[in-house]
Image 1 (cartoon, rainbow over the protein chains, first blue to last red):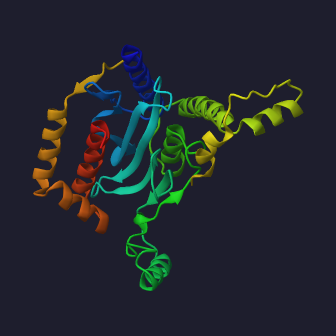
Image 2: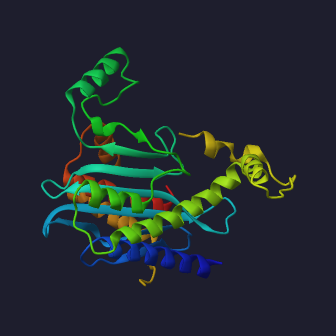
Image 3: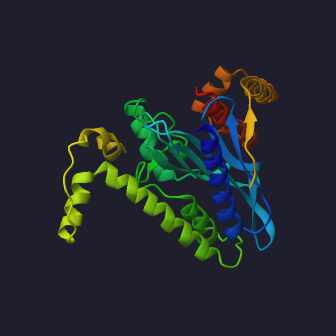
Length: 233
Length: 59
């Protein structure tokens, strides 16, 4: 089992490599790192940050890191955390981050942090802090807010983040990048769809019946088992 | 395809000590600072790597 999981992490890293190379110019190497004796892996580029260019000038960096560990069954590796960050080369601080933590306690499982300031927003946060510091802990930092985006199943994928960098931030890309992100995004959404069907089997069966499929109910399913995935923000 | 790099507990804990020593802080001090102030670029890099180490160690 261990060998196959290790192979999975290598294939996972190769897929990330192919996606990055199909979108961004330049060279980088995506590497899986494993904690000895455990099925926990970090997959990221060997050089911690990936250089992002605009018109050939290095203006920003991309940090991406994937954490893989065993799923509920204990048989397969699952992505349980991701970090995607856009950083400025001026001070190497993040401009925007997209984080996912399957085991998040209070913040949204998947969220954006926007590292920017807006006076009127700070006013709102400062007033809330004055009423009760527990409501807003860091009113001076808009970046401390976690903007929720779809929970575990409907979160953005790496391809979404890369398209954001190219299409919205004007980062240099390589020819054919749109096909690469579209292909990767489709594969991602099909995988997420399969997981979502597991979470909402009654709904999935109902839709299939309406479309003319014959679907028989099984008693082996506990619908309550998957409720947290549907409820958590 | 890149092969898997296997790291030991000692290597991860050594790396964590080195990162924190670079900032002249304990892990507890760093976590308190990260919770209350906006981190500088080098501090963000340390925070990201500390998070990866903690994940690998299962903390």
